[in-house]
Image (cartoon, rainbow, N blue to C red; front, side, top):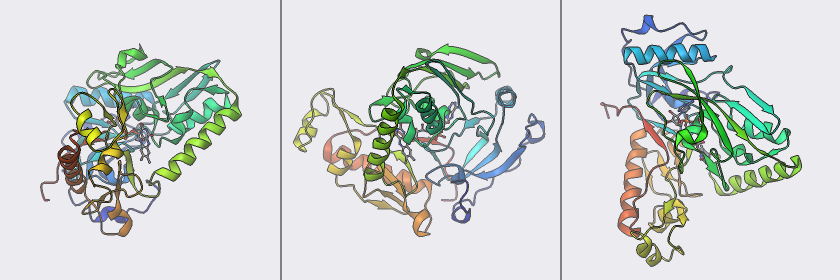
Length: 346
Ligand SMILES: Cc1cc2nc3c(=O)[nH]c(=O)nc-3n(C[C@H](O)[C@H](O)[C@H](O)COP(=O)(O)OP(=O)(O)OC[C@H]3O[C@@H](n4cnc5c(N)ncnc54)[C@H](O)[C@@H]3O)c2cc1C
C-alpha cells in the first residue's frame, strides 16, 4: 500500500489535526515524526483519516521511550502493524500512531524454537521456519500482517492459530520496560488476546516440530492456491470482516431453517450467513460486500476512482448485521478492529 501513489487519498483526507502542544517534547526518534499522516496509506483497505502524529521507531529503545512518554503525558498511542485488520475512521487518530520500522523485525532459529520480533512480517517468519525444517506455522505464510498484529489478533487460517505452539512472549509495558511472560498470560481466544492496557507485543517464541521442508512448501503452496481462488486478493480489503459464527442453542433452529447444515458447537463460516441473508455484492458508496467471498468487504471506490470513506464501511456493516439478524437470526461480531474518530464534516 505504501508504495502506491497517494492520489486516492486526496478526496478522503480533508480533516487536519492541529499541532499538539507536546510536539516538541516528544523523545527523539532517528526517523523523526510526521504530522497529519494519512492512515489510508497504512491500511490494506486504503481507508482512514490522518494521524495527529506519526512515528516509526526503529529500535526497542525508541519504542520504550515513546511508550513511556505517551503514558506519562496521557497521550493516546495506537500501534499500527501492516494495517491489514485495521479500520481507521475518517476523522483519523488523535495522539500518536506508531508503526514498527525496520530494525524491530529480528527472526532467529534456535534448534526447534523460532523467535520473532513484532515488526517481522508473518510471511517471513513462516518462510524462516520452513527453511529450518520446522512445521506448525506454515499457515502464517498467507496472512499479510506483521507478528505484532498476528499476536494481538491470534491470527489463524487453514487449521492453524498464532498461539498454538507459542511458548513465550515479550512485551514493552506502558512505562517502557521489557517483560517476558508465558504465552497463556495473553488469554488467547478465537481472533483475540487480552493484554494489560498500554502494553505492546515486542516478540514471541514458538516451539515447533521438525518436518520435511518440501512438505511444508507443499502446504504453503496449497494454502496460497486456495486463497487466490476463493478470496478477492486484487481488491483492497481487511480480510475476513466478521468472525465465524459459533452454533448455539440460541441460533441453531434459525440456521437449520435456512438450510445451513450445522450442529451444536460448530464454527460456521460467516460468509455462509452473509450469503444466506442475500447480502453478496451489496454496496454502500465505495464499500462493497465482495462478490467473490462475501465475508470480505472491499474498497471498490479506491479501484474505480470514486473514493470510499470509513463511514461507507460502517453503514455497510450495519446493513449486513441487520439483514443477517432479521433473515438468519444470527448476531454477527466484527473481526476487523476499528479505531479513531468520526469525521465531524460528514
Ligand atoms: C487479504 C487478507 C487476508 C487475510 N487473511 C487472514 C487470515 O487468514 N487469518 C487471519 O487471522 N487474519 C487474516 N487477515 C487479517 C490480518 O492480516 C491479520 O489479523 C493480521 O495478523 C494483522 O496484522 P497487522 O500487522 O496487519 O495488524 P494491524 O491490522 O496493523 O493491527 C491489528 C491490531 O493489532 C494491534 N497491534 C499491531 N501491532 C501490535 C503490537 N506490536 N502490539 C500490540 N498490538 C498491536 C493494532 O493496534 C490493532 O488493534 C487477512 C487480511 C487481508 C487483507
